[in-house]
Amino acid sequence: MNNPQITVILTVWKRNNLEKQLKCIFDQTIKPKEIIIFQNENHVDIKGIVNKYKLTHIQSNKNLKFHGRFSLPLLLTTEYCVIYDDDTISNKKWFENCIRLIKEKNCIVGGNGRTLAPTYFNGAMYSRLSGGGRMEPADIKVDFVGHCWFFKTEWIKYMWQNKTYSFDNGEDIQFCASAKIYGNIDSYVPIMPENDKTLWGDIEQSKLGTDQYATFKTQKNHNNLRQQIIKYWIDKGWKPLFAGG
Image 1 (cartoon, one colour):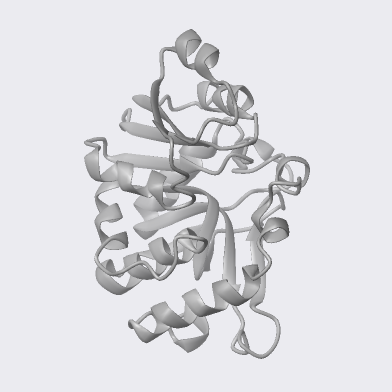
Image 2 (spheres, one colour; image 1 turned 90 degrees about the vertical axis):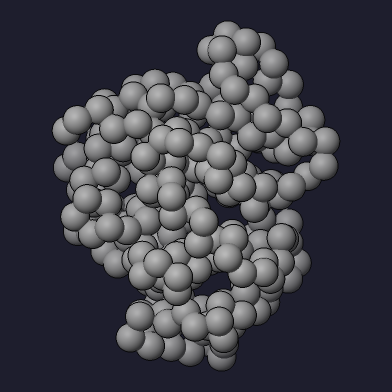
C-alpha cells in the first residue's frame, strides 16, 4: 500500500480522552500527514498536549456541537480524512482496514453502523447495530456510520449541498445520506474479526461512550429528533437499505 495521505480530526468538548486517542493514532501502521484538534468551548485544558505533540488546534468559544468539525475537510488537500468522536479508540490496523474497504467499495467507512428498520417510526428504529466495540464477521453495508468516519476528503462536499435539519444531532445521518443522494456513496462497517482486534475501529466504546456526557443520556428528545432527521433526508431522496438503497 503506497503511503496514502490522511488528515485526522479529533474532537474535544468535556471528555478528557485526547492523549489516549493520540496514542491510538500514533500506533497506526499507516501514519497520518496531519492531526487537527477541534475543540468546542474550553472545558478541558489541552494546551500542554497540543504543545507537546505540536498539533494544529482549532478552538471555538461557541459550541459548534457535532457538525462544526465536518466543515474542516472542506479546507483539506489530503486524499483521505478521518473524523473521530471523543470516545472512540481504534486499534493499530484500523486505517489499513478502512483504506482497503474504500478501495474495494468506494464507501464511507465507520467504527459503527446503523441499519434502519422498515418500521423505524412505529417501532424499533434500527434493525441492526454493527461494530461499535462489537466483533463484525464481515464487511457490512449499513444506512449510516458513526463514532469514526473514514472517507475520501472530496466527499465532504456532499454533506453541505443541502440545508442542515438540526445542529443538535444527526451529523452521521446527514453525511451518509447526502453522500448517497448526491454521490452514490455507500456506507460500510468493515470486518472486525474476533481473533484479530488489531483491525477494530473501536475497542473501548463500552467504557468511554456511556458516561454522563453521552448524547443519548443528556438529550431528552434524542430518538424523536433522529427520527425527524431521517424523515427529512428520505424526503430529500435518500433510500435506506430496506427501501432498496
